[in-house]
Image (cartoon, rainbow, N blue to C red):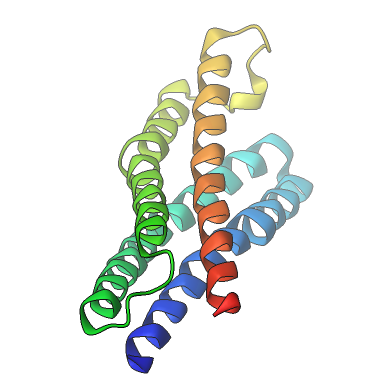
Length: 162
């Protein structure tokens, strides 16, 4: 049982820590550094770097999700059943859904839109519908990441209570 819980906590820490690190450190630092050296061109390169980091992290998140689900179910089967098992399973399911939608649909759509533009998104007029569509997709991506972070924080809280 201890091994299952340990694997559960490690997977949760990797997933949650990765999301927070990408959103709070990697993306801001990449945009800041590359924009400072090359303006709009740097912003485009930063978007490409952060997009690639996210694509690779989605693979990590799918692995962490598989471990979370397997260990949570394993703890239930072996017993004793984890406190709030159904709610934990629901939260992990929501995190998985958010990650899959982001990784399989939203982030690739953002990359396609950026590539199809042929110019930096920031160079488009604020009233340009392509810029508005890009902004909408980016907001969805951010919200999906937020769902994962909130779910992960709730799960971490439950682990510290036990």
